[in-house]
Image (cartoon, rainbow over all chains, first blue to last red; front, side, top):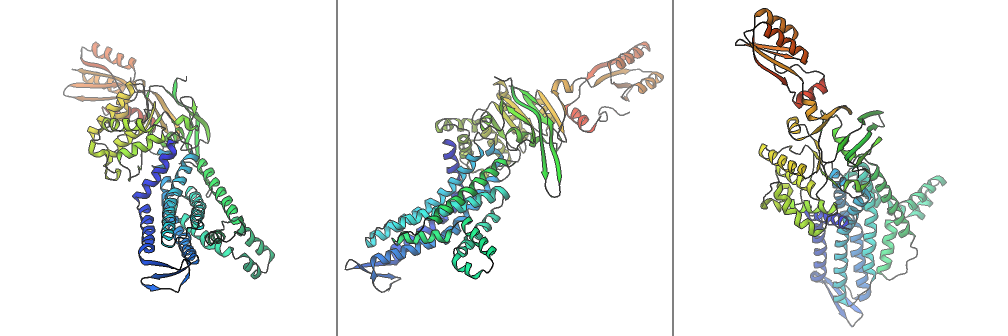
Length: 273
Length: 316
């Protein structure tokens, strides 16, 4: 346990030193300050509200809808823009461990390679989670205080974002172990973030493809790769209190992450440094 | 309980590249036994396989064949690394850490409790000669010598029974080098086994009891420093040597030097030296000196690596 805590805390220290943590923290704080001071919500007659940004009023709307839609926008920004930033920052934190002169010393300690890698992985997930939860929890409280709407869906959306990030981090870890390259890790992860929303339009794409084998490849890719777009849809459903049609995107994405992380650990154990 | 700190049997590491197909035998069938409490030096030219050998001991590299044991435990077992303190050669300590923070981190990885770390860190930083100011200075601000010292402190953090040091005095000034040697001598007296990988042959000769020389991945020579450096020849020095005798002796000696009426001769064997003494005394020459010469570890090393070296003392 001492070693695990040390590995996690070391990741935090490195994130602090690289200003990654503070960069995220600053962005999250700026967004919350915007919600506190710039966006003014006036609840009129209990259920209706007017919202004004920089003093310009928008038409009155149902307060529940207003809060859910705004939370949906924040969750969307967090889901894609925040995730892209997190991937960009985390790639360096992972590959730093494999630097010659540093990895030998870590491996010389009485800690298994699996433990070392998972400790760093967990530390990285926690660095990003701390900021995501700070933003989500902070925004949720601000909305709750301003409007009296306290839906739990927005909180769950934070967990969905952390979940997808942890899957993408597994890809970063695998590339880091295989190639020692944070640049390639970023490229591959961004490629997944770009390709999977396209694959999510499976039904449309299948109609466009004439050959059966090409449709099979499309389906295989769709089911094999993480379903970032579909999980985003689930996140939105949770925020809007709509029923989730299928949890398949979540569990199949979890399997993808577990398999990729497993391969990363296996390769790390076999590697010579 | 095993009597050896390190035991390797036919340890081999072959690096292969798939395309183009190539093989490099970095370590080739090396068997070494380092007794507990011994100070052992591993020598060899650049690229001989020393670092790869050390990495296999620490499980940073996996052997292609053979095995390594540390205090009787297979080196692949993480527990085998618990009694080891290691200072790598080209270390890259995290620059965001302070000296204190670094020892705390690596101490925690070695399984030390928080209380024990708090007690041990200031002690060790003082032992390696880092003043109070350096304790909370980021490693990025440390000089090369300071990094070596804090690296040594890191290796000593969990009171290891085996210390594996790769070029420990690299970048350290002579005063610091002496300081490090004193620290290591203190540890030797406490029974800590010290495995030294160094290019500084004079330092190894001063400090180590046993050495092994590896070349192109193979064991070239091993033994105690005393046995390897003793008895390389016999030196005979005489005055008033007639020209005829001098010419005769020059032909028999491995090397010679003549100056100011003094003839210095170096013979390879005791018999040759005795015969020379008989001849000199028979010619009423005065013997000035008669001694057994001792090789330096550097001479032994050069001889092992390149074959017999030219005699350094005299020219023929």
